Length: 325
Length: 161
Image 1 (tube, rainbow over the protein chains, first blue to last red):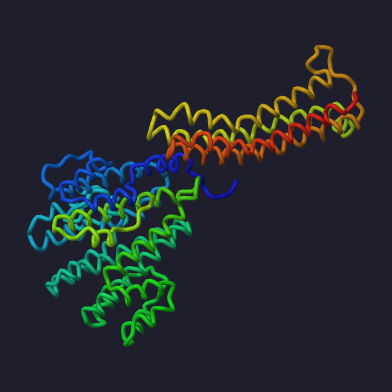
Image 2 (tube, one colour; image 1 turned 180 degrees about the vertical axis):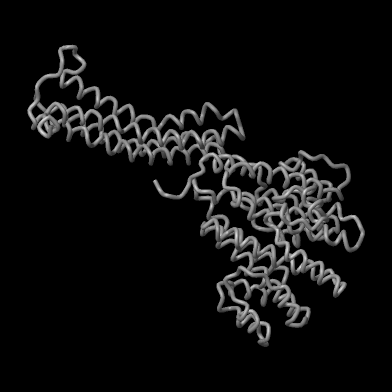
C-alpha cells in the first residue's frame, strides 16, 4: 500500500453527496426560466429547497444555509483538520473584514457575515473586539492590527480589504505547504495567480497607479511580483503575461473582454478540480466537492441576480460557470 | 535444531501457514471496502444491501487460503486423528512451494480488490443502477486469486506422500 493515508469513508460520503450538486443542464434550465419565480422553483426542487423562502429577494438565504450545511457535512469527514480548513479560511477573513468595518462604521453588518469559517462567529466577534488573537489560531493578528491602523491613518476602508486578503492568502499558503499534498498546493497557487491576474487587468482597465496594484497583490502564486510589475509597466500587459501558464486566459481577455475572462478563470480552476473525479481513496474529492458547491453557489447567484434584472437568457447562459458534475 | 527446522514436517506446516496468510489481503481489502461502504450508508441507509455485497468481494482470498491450508493439513494427516505422517525434506519443501502462490497472490490481490470494491461502492453511492458494473470491475481482480488457487491446488495434488 502507498504511504499516503487513505480516506475511503470520506470519499464515499462525498461521492454520495455529489448527487445533490446541480448539473449544468439544471443551471441552464434556470437561466432559461421565463420569470424569476420559475427559476426559484427549479432551485427549490434541488438540495437548496430545504430552506423555504417567501420573497424571491431572499434567495441568498437559501444559498447561505445550504453552503453552511455543506461545510458542516464535510467538516467531520477527514480527521486531519487543516485539509478542509484551507478552504474555510477565506470565510474567516471575510467575517473579520465585516466585523472590522462594522467597528469603524458603527453600522450592523450582520447580513454580510457567513457561517462556515473555521472559527465560530461568536468566538470571532468576542475575541476580535478584545483584540485577543490567542483564541484565533489561524488568524494573523498582525494583519488585523495593520488593517486597523492603516484605516485610522487613511480613513480608507480599502486597506482593510487588501491587507486581510494578503493575510488570507499567506495563511492558505502556509497551511497548504504543511499538508504536503501537491493537489492542494497547486490549487492554492493557481488561485493566487488568477487573483493577481484579475487584479492586474482590472487596474489596467481602470487606469490605476502601480502603487494600488502593489497593495492588492496577494502572495502564494507561481508568478512572481516582478513579472506582474513588468506586465503592469509594459504597454501590452497581455504580451508579457502570455509567457505564463495562463497565456490562453489572457488571450480570452484580449478577444472577449473582462466578463468572459473572469468566467474563463473560474472554468480553468474547475477543469483542474475535476481531476479529483478519478481519485477513489485520497482526500482530493472532498476538497473538490467544497469547491464545486461554492462554484455552484456562484452560478446560482449570477442566474438569480440576472433574472431579477430581466437580463436575456442567452447572456445569462454565457455567464454560468462550468459545473463539477 | 537446524535439522528439525528443515524437516519435511516443519516445511509442510509452514506451507499451510503461508497459505492461510492470504487472509491478510482479504482483511485489508474488506476493511477498505467497509469504510467506503459506511461512507455511502451514512448518506443513504437504503443502500446497505447493495454495498454489503460489494464489501464481501475481497473476502474470498482468505477462504482460498484456508482451503489450501486445510488440504495441506489433510494431506499430512494432521486432521485425520492418526497423527502427522513422516515426510522427507523433499516432500515438505514441495508442499511449502505449492502453498506459496495462494499465500502471496492472496495478500496482494485482496488489497487490490479491496480498492476496486471501494471504488465500486462509491459508484453505487452515486449511481445505484450501476451495481452490476461496479461488481464486475472488482470481480476481475478475483481472476488472479482463482488462478493462484488453481496453481496451488494442482501442485499440492501432484505431490506424492
